[in-house]
Length: 378
Length: 124
Image 1: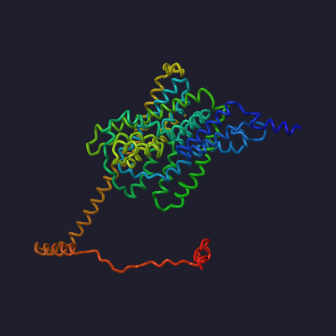
Image 2: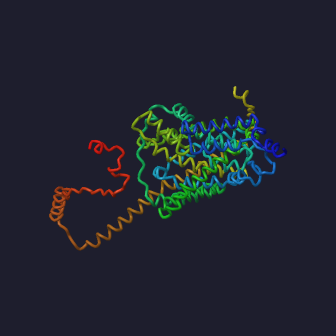
Image 3: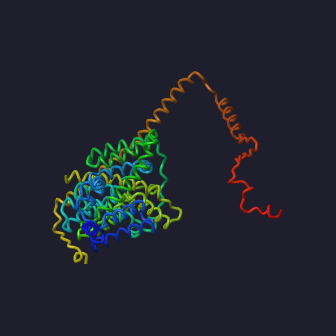
């Protein structure tokens, strides 16, 4: 009889709270968005399913090592991958092996758009201070503006691990909503003529430049922000594996098998961290509001800086300001959004090649920003 | 309206917060600017080096030909010959048509004898 009672006490029905049910609905919403609208399905399905796993009601600390925060449980081992920054670094390795920096090398001035689009990070940091978050928490929340999951996990784990779930979920949620968030801002801040600007095609980039880029970029960024080395080191290592053309096997593993494994583990673990007991707080709500503002500000920062650059550029070198929006590093979704908006203004104007430059630069900028913030605050 | 919804306190913003935000943003900008500067200059250096290399190679070729004097008529004749050669150049085709034979190895799965619908058999 004791066994039956114990079994019933351990069952989900006995431990369910309205919070658990609400979070299960959130997980189902993520899965629905991924399958129905194909919004970042590679991320939203593992995260959505992780939310279901993390919010299946169970008794924690009953000696059976099940919960995320219980030492010895499988979920806890996976959580350590987040907490110690292992997953973000490995994701960056895969991204590096997938990324072609040619467009950025061909037109280096577009790198600045990636820097400008980090505006949301620092404005949101100030916004979070006004909402009563402390300095470290505010900086961790600000990184949502970078629209870069690995950087957000990395910074949140170092500065505010207790807010990591809300921050990371906000980043991935808004990244999935990029096609909804960005277009109105792009149209608001640009004229039809500006959206129709045709940019000169990028020049061909030699292998010599492609091989040199990850090495030089690592040295420059590493010397300035050594705290971001675990991210940028892996990013540029992955890129060198790809561009050197002599480590094809390693590059293939980094961008296919390894990246897929880490994406699954990262998604499920991030989802599982959103346990109703710790996630459903007023702070999470504020973080979601700040996250939306951060994305908008970063998008605006990139677009406005592109317009500013146009003041100094010759007519034939003008930049289509839409590509500034791709400075938020949601790759490649923001570049796709730029392409779609460009085609709406002029069906013959293909901007995706140009938009990839600020897009990859934004990714580098996000990691540098994370490193610099750690350098300032730790 | 939003200040009623959210407990916003602007007095919480200190100069240290503003200084941190601005200086971090500036450093991000500077580091990416440095990167763009390096990759803006690098191709120019490479082109200059390449030009120098070509010039050196050209000088060497000139010094080898220093003793030989080519007159204007000879140059014109060579030019005309080259022009005629390139103008009359056509793509030559072999005019051989090749039909690739597709070998089908026998398998009961693609045999006509084993077709489910075999009208000829019924007609007989």
